[in-house]
Length: 276
Image (cartoon, rainbow, N blue to C red; front, top):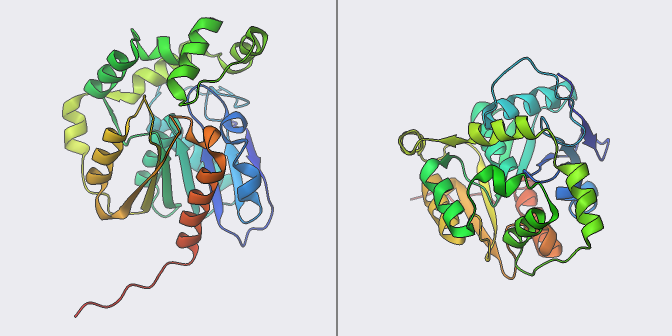
């Protein structure tokens, strides 16, 4: 399977940072305001996940789970010679990042999750739909017209964005395709509440930064706090005011600063004092 992978550096001695996009865009749209800030100090990889952007959807597998996406990304990174990396996942990309970290602890050194969870139990998905007044996740994330896309952006931002209809029509054409396969991806992301309960174990592997918009209406701060408690001592929760779900686009300077602080700490960890 071929996968389009954009790399913004060539210095292999530096930490590799992998940026995983959300469901309503591709890699470059999601991370356009982060790539330049990070590429000065890190080797940055911006893949398009399967069935998004420039990826080539040629797979015989019927698996549409985040774990399958994680295996695709891990395989692509290893073909590119990446041995160790920090993975930054936004929304859907965060689900993939957690699956990568769990399955490949030798590859993934740390995780940054923005507006995301480890799992999507059905009750959480139903609560999101009720809160946003949507019939289904597919209706929300795969809009068919300008009105639907405006509703999606309104749900994802704190300060409401306005674009002319022509721009939004172009966005629908360029970003929202492979609808059948993406609907299957959404279905593959949801698990039963029982499965979620059984998988809720304290995270023992990588350090994790939960970077959240305080006004996120899709995955509100309450869910972020519960996730921090679930993950345990390995996780740190940092919130950013006056920002919604699309925090990295609404507050890029603050987001980039928090992200760089975390990555720097991973490169140069503070020594812990010996107890006793």
